[in-house]
Image (tube, rainbow, N blue to C red; front, side):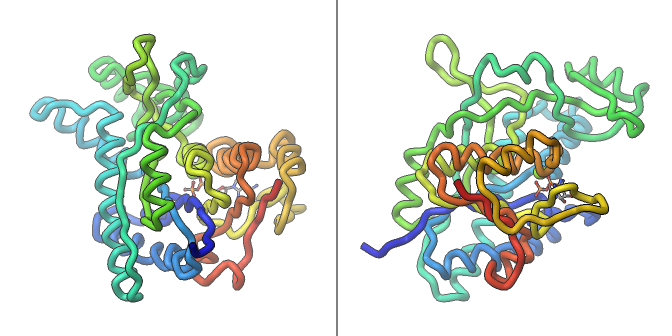
Length: 315
Ligand code: ADP
Ligand code: MG
């Protein structure tokens, strides 16, 4: 049997909806096709792959539609919006990648799987929801909405008010065996989009969904461990991660060991909500058997890692 490596590629928000651009479907498709250039570089190297992606803007728009149509169409809970965006975005990535493969004359299948992700029913974030989602409001606007839709809301200091939901820590991907079988056959699997749909296990042993979101980088690491991947690639909008990011003494990292990045995380170089979850995902993946994590820009992955700059984290 041919030797191959298995990797998970996590596409950041800008792979599909760059900041400052209107997220029309036409634009999303165009960006997705461009992102496929990066994925094709891995395929050309015979990687076996699972692909994950963010869904922040898309799920935000889905929630807005639910809110605006709430008196004429049945309301959709967050879990359904997550599942819908996994399907819609999965379709975009799947078809764009299929077309890239056809053009390159490569015969490999691509499939999208709606992914439920198990979280702890007692995850502390459930009692203390703090992940901002959906639109922005003034306090006067959000109070009646919170009442109508049963939202938890919170002020973003100095910026406005938003809905908040729990962001529990992902533990296991439910359909991990099916994903692993497909990936081992060389099928490219798009899974855990937007971090997947959070579910917990009830006392009866059955699954139940609830209104929450999972960080896509954390879910990507769990997926990578669950399918026995050796490598995790996190593609975002910076080439490398930095110590003292944005300061005069900023220093980019080429290669770093697990213990050193753990110390830097503790020292506060990687904020929650942006680089923090990526670094935590990298740590978790390596501590659970992963061999390497690469954090770089989509652009570097497009021109080929050997030609660009990246940060590599190893055990
Ligand atoms: P994604 O959509 O790919 O998840 P995020 O915006 O969540 O992207 O995270 C990437 C961002 O993290 C970068 O654009 C950068 O501004 C920010 N960032 C924060 N701390 C660092 C750091 N120490 N090194 C590099 N980037 C950092
Ligand atoms: Mg992010």
